[in-house]
Each structure stands twice: as structure tokens, then as C-alpha cells.
Length: 389
Figure 1 (tube, helix red, strand yellow):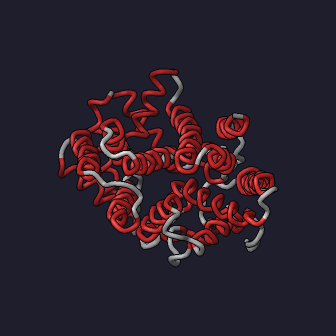
Figure 2 (figure 1 turned 45 degrees about the vertical axis):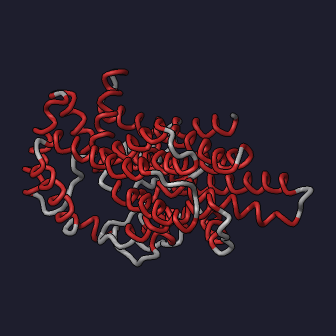
Figure 3 (figure 1 turned 180 degrees about the vertical axis):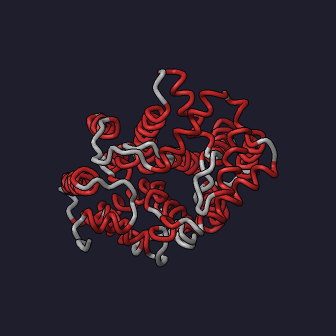
């Protein structure tokens, strides 16, 4: 409980050095204000206005089809009477807390109570998790729904035939689609897990599970069609967003790189976690179902994300934080397997040391250096690797 309480405090307490208004945050604030002024029935007008504005711009701006985050901030405003930007920030912080709790519960279901405690501690101090809790950005919010869908897939494979798990899984996929267009990457990873279950045996794939995997995203798309005012409007908004992104100067300058760029960025932010996770990959066995489950999820989504032209940013990899820490903790358990009598104590000390390193990384990156965007140049400057003007 102390670990979780500490992690919640770190997410709710305002600690980031950057207190300005990010470009994307300003757009989210505008969408929420439009929703406050016009109500939910005005959403097609918001989408039409976005299309009009986007057509006149050289580069891409984020579309209002990230509906669920905008709508959640709108509901937060109605409940607590906070202004739009503050509502967006508080929703992001709240869902970062929920992600911490969800990751701990997921860890418990994977490998028991002690493992869950380790996952909770590592997630509580994860720099990227803390970063997204400090700003009015969708990425931490998206991570919650992605992790929930991943967990519910695992539970459905372990306990086939439970209608409440099937409905929960279907709804999580629907809400994921309503959150961000990156839901496609998550969905592809989940489908891959279902397909590879035939050989890896994570559990039992039921007909209802396959149906939920298809119907959930389709339901989300149907809702987006109604919100945007028609299928053609929805398609136009996405086409403009994607095509104009290739011309956005900031995306060209910061969103490109080789396939291993995410590995470089993760090594800069969470070096110990990444090295332990990579170590776990090289000692895998078919009997290690949870680890295989996480590796396939990371691997397939990584394969897609590292091939997006001008579309790489460590914020988008926020959904890998919990799976990477599952692999890292599993590797720690193996590393200290030689000391049977002292293994538990050594693991606790190692987890505490890693948490200290992670918190130090957050201190350096986001408190001493006012880092806002998690792009490679900013990370290198924050860590004093790059010092050129």
C-alpha cells in the first residue's frame, strides 16, 4: 500500500519543470472548450471546423477524433467546474494513477502477490509514466485503455466462457478506438496474440473472444462516424491528419530515425529496465507464458511503430512500460536464483535500487531540465550527452 500511495503522490503532485502550454495541449483545450460551449450534439461541427482549418495548414494538427480523452475532460469540467486545460491535466493524472493500479493488479494475476508488489514499485517510479501524468496529453490516458485490453485478453484466454470478461474486453477495445488512432497498433498486437496462442498455448481461444475482438473496434468506429457526422467526414479528417503530418516541420525534425530509435530512447530514459528486459528475451522458454505474452505484444506493436514515417516519439511507447517491467522483474528473479536463502531479500534490494535510478532519471529529465517532448535530442541534452548549441 505504501508503494502504491507513493506512486499516486508522484503522479498527482506537480513536479515537472516545464509549466508552459504545449502545442497539442492548446488544441485539446480548444476542443474541450468547444464541447463546453456547444454540447455533445455540436461535435460534428467541431470536426467540420477541424477539416476547414487543416486544409489551410502546411503541417498536421491533432484531430478531434481522439474523442474519449476530450469527452472525459468535458465530464471532469461538469463535475468539478475546472477550466478546460486543468480538466485535461487532471484526467491525465487520474488515469496515470489508474494505470499504476491496473498494472499492479495485472502483475498479481500473472504471477502472484509478490510479483505484483515488484511491478507496482517499478511502475510507480517509471519516468515516462510520471511525465505523462504532469501534462494535458492523451498518451497516458491511451495507455490505460491499451493495458486494460491486454489484461482482459489474458483473462479471457485463462477463463474462456465468462460473459463479463468478454463484454469488458469488447468495451475496452471500443473505448480504445475512441481514444486515439494508435489503437490500430494495439489491435494488431492483440490479434497476433490470439493467432500465436495456437502454438504457444496462453489459454483457450473461444468463438466469443474472436467475435469481441472484431465487434469491439467496429463499434468504436461506428460511434466515431456518428460523432463526426458521417463516414466521409471521418475518412477526410484522418486522411488530412496523416497526409499533412509528412509536411510538418517539427515531425520531420524529431519524428524520424532508424528502426532501433525506440531502443535508444528507452536506454536513455530507463537503462536498467531495458537491459534487464532484453536479457529476459534471450533466456525465454515456452513455459514462460506471461513473458512470451508481453514480448509478442511489444514486438508486434514495435514493428509497426518503428516504420511510421515521421511518427516516432517515446510518448507513443508509454503502453510498453508495464510489459517491459514484467520482463525486467522476471529477469531479476532469474539473476538471483543462485542465492535461494537470500533471493527474496536481494530482489527487494535490487527493485529498490532500480526505483532510485528511475526517480533520478525523472529528476534529471523533467525537473532539472524542463523536458516536454520525449524526443531524442531533448533526452540527449537533458543527460548532458549533447552540449552543442
